[in-house]
Image (cartoon, rainbow, N blue to C red; front, top):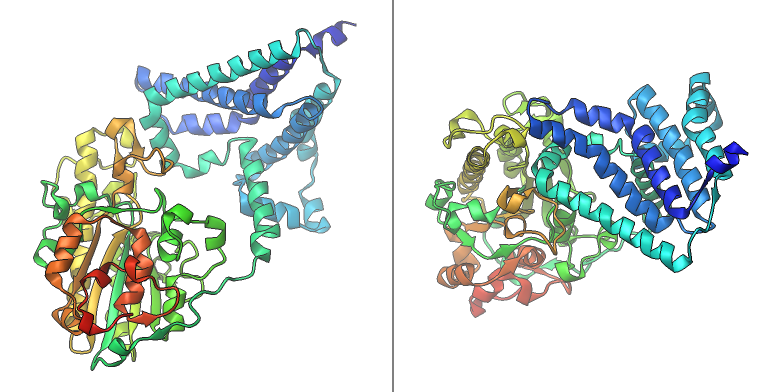
Length: 549
């Protein structure tokens, strides 16, 4: 009788109890790991650590308030309990990271492999954290103590209160959370039950949707136009895809510090009003290489549709992608590509972290071997944070004092800016080296270079750090990106580019990553129905006598 009274509660009590149990037991590993990364040497750091279980509880409280509706709440909580217990067992026992790949392994394992994992310890773990709590949930009687409209209002108030608490903590400790998560990305995958739920969804999407989507080919009608076919020399364009460079800190755009001293001597065209497609690499890179503008961009379609590099290849242009930033996000999957970090070149790399000049390693040999027109993409590590100090070598650390750590919360704003600006100095030198390399091949090719960063970066403005803010709320520091071009005199002359027109356009007009697809096709005079002249930046400044792509 006493047990029956204990196992009674209203719907709000059920939600709060469930959120508390998941916070204290199923997220114990996350909390202990996250706390181990915090140096408890001040009242601020102690309070920051104490806010973590509060944030988890409030977040779960909101989620459960929305999802735990009558007839579904018990099955849902039981499913999450069992899944979380299994996830925690493998994380504690094997140091497993629970993500889409791991869930795919779990779903595709055979009986022999599965049986080898079943142990007494696993049984006890599932019993204590999954089965017994699930049994208790099944026994709980959820009483209707008030009218439905009263409980609905109470649940809404509970949700709003939790949201306010999260926002308040974010306002006070955003910098600390941003630094912790960016420096220790794997710790986020310890959050339960979000880790195994997100992993399961990702696996299902890959298994039942993306894998079965056929490749959408575009621009199969692509061919070289008469202008490029009539050239005495072949044409070579190098596209450098920047990483985390923000236009606000480019001296080419008016920043008072000389962060682009070499490029300012290279006679480049700098587009002062360029915007990105997204605020993170996974969105911006596929978007800028696709034929879809940001307003209509479909990430799922982009995963199985060809992009501008494929269209160039259809036209017979030699294409190559060199990467120093962890992958091309699908943009280079069907063309020759190489991860330069895998070469483990000691003159450029320390472990799996390489300086961007690795992208130029023996590029001269490749260019010498080209027999036709070519486009080469160099995907930078650029200014990727929070370890900005690792994005420049000692000779480029001109702005001091620096933040010689990836713990950005321990550095002043000026130290962060100094370190970030030093990374731009390194990029400036790398781009200058690339231009000089192209100049050395001026007798073989009409040469040109395009540089465009994938997204920008926040360095503490309005309390925001790093990047990845939803685009609609993102500050200009994350969406205003540096975009520049360099063209040899022969390229300008042979393709009839009006330099004064281009300089005026770069100074005044708004451009974006939407323009890249069509501008690259235009630079190689590729004719295809995919090409839209009004989106080609250079088309506005081509002589009518030059012929059109």
